[in-house]
Amino acid sequence: MPNTYTQLQIHFVFAVKWRLAVIDQPWEERLHQYITAIVQNNNHKMLAINSAFDHTHCLAGVNPKQSISNLLELVKGDSSEFINKHQLTGRKFNWQSGYGAFSVSRSHLDKAVKYVHNQKMHHQKQTFREEYLLLLKKYEIVHDEKYIFHDLLG
Image (cartoon, rainbow, N blue to C red; front, side):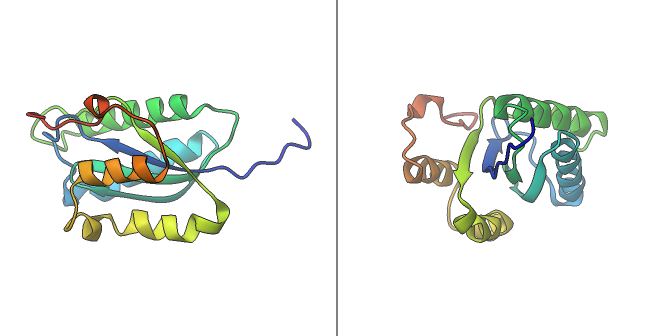
């Protein structure tokens, strides 16, 4: 549509199901490249991507022609298939259902990129669950903790 201009940056967070088949350092970069290709092939722009062993953060410039839920369905489904097809883990890999999607203003974009890039250091001090609950609180998202990403026993 002519004369339509947008600037939509979204910080996505999604977790490995039950934290069983973890994201390992030897193939993490391949996963990031694969997810970036999915995002960019759907006419979005990957601004930053990083993982800790049990979850992934993506910061993307989003094209409004595709819904966020459709994009994340493709990212999670196709990347799970990629990991399993190439047998990158010792067991079947799945992402847990759901995701977080947080809007990022242009004025906070540099800070968000640094946050995504520093995930490994960040998680030396804080669990994924603690981080996720803080993000929900920071963005004032009403939630029910029974639907928050769970560990195998949690």
